[in-house]
Figure 1 (cartoon, rainbow, N blue to C red):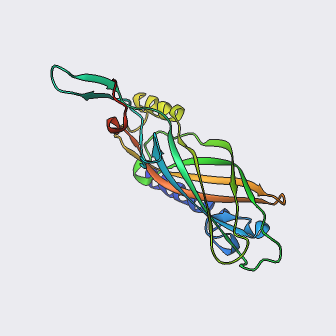
Figure 2 (cartoon, helix red, strand yellow):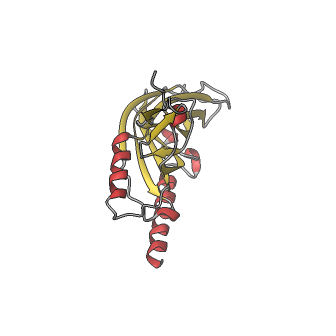
Figure 3 (spheres, rainbow, N blue to C red):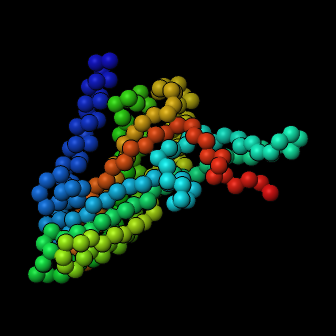
Length: 222
């Protein structure tokens, strides 16, 4: 128990340290850093989804089950939908100075990294390897005023490679197999504006990983 308490504290300090280094106070707060370089503050949120944007869910499925439809004798078996779990990236941009002397430049996110941190109740779960994606997301900030602009993009969350690795680790017997497990995903976005000034932004979201029933979104065989 003492060892688990220490690990839990370290995980919490890691999250706090990361968020503090990229916002948390001053012009870059909350969630953005180097806003003094761009004149723009970014507020980013992450909404996990599975299969399509209409199915927003933070339950990441790692076990492909068999779906059953029909009644005897017309029973049909088919594989549950099983693929990457994705994310909706929602970015609100606002100005530090509502009356800038220089027009704020367009921001170009060039890449983002996802780090996965086990929750305090899931310290015994397998680790999930970080994921870095190179994806251009164009953010056009307001020209002036106190309003915001909104940009949406689809991105990665927990891909099929990490899902399959997680299940393999669970089945290996080294880790706690009492599914589901709880995690926090930390997204760090990096890029430059049109004047070649660097910036970043951080967003977090909680999720569960385990065995979930997605037969309702699985296409049935014809």
